[in-house]
Image 1 (tube, rainbow, N blue to C red):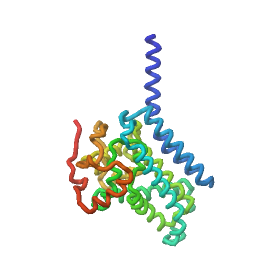
Image 2 (cartoon, one colour; image 1 turned 90 degrees about the vertical axis):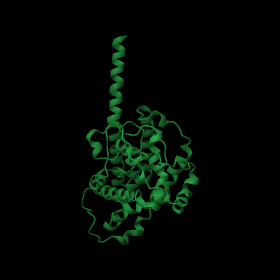
Image 3 (spheres, one colour; image 1 turned 180 degrees about the horizontal axis):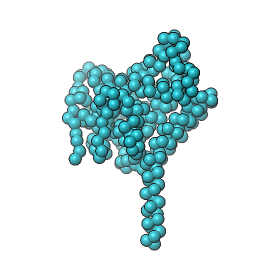
Image 4 (cartoon, rainbow, N blue to C red; image 1 turned 180 degrees about the vertical axis):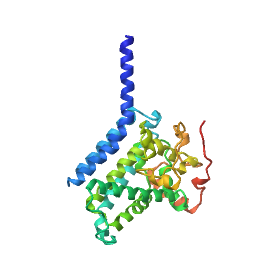
Length: 310
């Protein structure tokens, strides 16, 4: 009996380790590679939507198998709201994609984009540029009142799980998208490369806000995933760090990267907007609230004291 218990215990530990260190490479790197392959071989949008749906399902499954905070897997009366945010924002992302050919005139030259590079390298190149643009808009949203009022919707969450990444005010998502995409339009990004980006952004947002206890080891200093992004959602000054979407490149360059071993937020009281426990939770009210906040200035996130753990 003791031997069997020991074997079962060792097996459980090994399974947990495989899930912790293997889930993120599978769900982000693996599924991203699949999306890129589908685009490169001209399979169209529907198979990519299938990959995204599969990733969502696996993300929620793994969140229950290796939860970072078990309580965050339970509804906080926010499921309907989060689904509405996700549906609206995913739809808008893909709708905007189809308008890209209308902006082809913005390209500086037909010869700027490195079209002779392998397709997957072009996609990685586009991701790095997109990442810097979105991170810059994200950083600005913590500095300027009007942008913060829109961005506060995203920071109002009191738990972190996959869908939180898609919980954004549509106007703020538009600001981030335009900031990231404009440089790519100037460079003349081909439509077949651009078509991968909304899907890759969605995969990154799912992984970045996941409640799964992912571990990346030293790679956490390279990729902007949940292990580091949780700091960004704290309701103190730690929330003014880690703005990157795909990588930590912007934060490392701007001095806004933060990671403290053992200090990652793990309770709902550490999340949200400092001094705004009354922030509305209803989807429709969240669409209106930013405009009300713009008319009555509130403290910016920079004014919150920084919390440390011992």
